[in-house]
Structures are given as structure tokens and as C-alpha cells.
Length: 280
Image 1: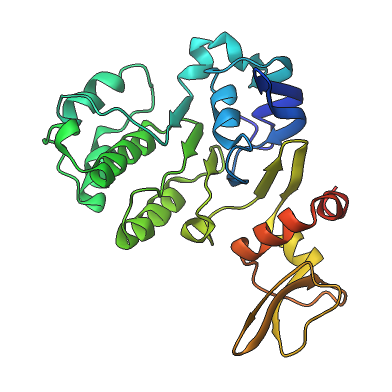
Image 2: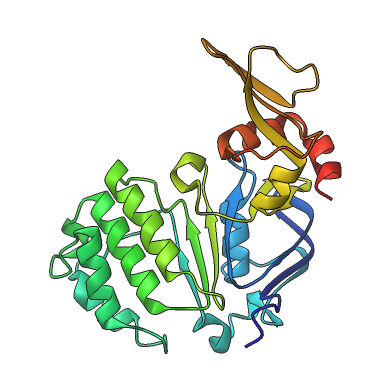
């Protein structure tokens, strides 16, 4: 497989729930070898987009294709290379091992030994009944299963919700270890701090389309994340503290800085049109 080939392609996508418009004209391409972070306000369509990509929702107009196949067709060749981890999961009344054994049959790259190792890493007992586990344990078991499927496309909706702090650290570690040049991982989240230093590129959505779709490198070229005693009059966003002002400002002199995803998100929401032009 050509790892530079676009895997997911969305053209002029429009989608609505009755009178609620979610997407008016969304264009997006997702490539392998990346861990995309999908950010946006509540209700902006992050979950909807993931469900459209895996064919659970149909577009109203426009196209969404996976490996050139319309996602709404739910083609078996497409589905065996794609797995979707939903935010809300109804755990069955069977053991985690039984769930994994029966649900992995349609996936050609399933690795049972890897699943066992991931369960150990997450401190989940796969012999336990799925529905008897805590919410956090259920989530970790499902993520372990999803990663051990080794599909080329992995879509994850709010995977850190319900996890304690040590488990969030483990989540970042195992996703990073499972990411390869032939895999595309897209993670929807509103808890941006949980996935900092993992996601790249960053996609920020609003209802009219994209505010940002850019790599961390490009973001750091365009924006400076800095602490200063004085408030920059051209700051896109700032927060005051005893140490001064933490700000997102234009990177006028090409200075290096660490991208702060929460600050980036706040700056983008407050300057949508400016950021669309800046990252076009």
C-alpha cells in the first residue's frame, strides 16, 4: 500500500438532523501515518463525522469515501480495515475474552497475544464479564480490543472519557506504540489536555466547515504560544495569571514555542475567520 495515499476523502459534505445543520460544506482528506485530533465545540459534529466515515450515517449531499469506496455502502472490504470505538458502549453480558474472540473473526489482522498484553497494560482482567466491569474498565477493554484488531483505520470517539489520570497516560502510550505509517487514527475529543503530545495534525471543526486542519509544525510556524508581562494588542487569545499573560499571538519572527492545544482551541474559536484564512 502507498502510505502517501489519501484513505478518507470528504467532498462538499452536507449533513443535518432535520432542522439542525451539522455540516454545510465540509472538505477533508485524511492520510495514513497520522494521528488526527478532531476538536470542536459540543454539537459541532465530531461524532457525526466519525459515524459518516464508517458508514453508520449517510450524507445528505456530497461524498465520503474510504479507499475510494463510498462509506455509506458499508462494503465488507472497507469494514474489515476499519474499526470505530464509540464514546458510549453497551457492554454485553459475556466475558471480555468471549467478546474479543467472537467479534474479531471478521478482522484479518487480529492479534490475540497483543490483546492479552494490552489488557495487562491497562490492568483489565479479560476473564471478567464485560457488563460487570466499571465504566473505565469497560472502556479500557474495548480500546485494547480495538488496537489488537490492527485495522488500517481506527476511529475513536472521546477515548479518554471515564479514565483516571494513570489510565490516560497509558492510553497515550499504547496508541503511540500501535501507530504505524500504514495506519490512520482519528480521535475525537474535547479533553485536549489528555491527548497533548499525541495528536498531529489538529483538526478544529465548526458548522461551516474547518477552522484548522494543520500539523503541529505548521501551527507553531504561524502562532507563538508565550508568557509575557505585557498583553500583546494583537493577541488571538490570552489568560492572565500572577506571572503575567499567557498568550497566543502571531509568530512574527518565526520563534519556536510549544503548541498548547487548549490555548489553540480557545484562540481558534474566538477568531474563526482569521484562522481559516491563516491556515487555508
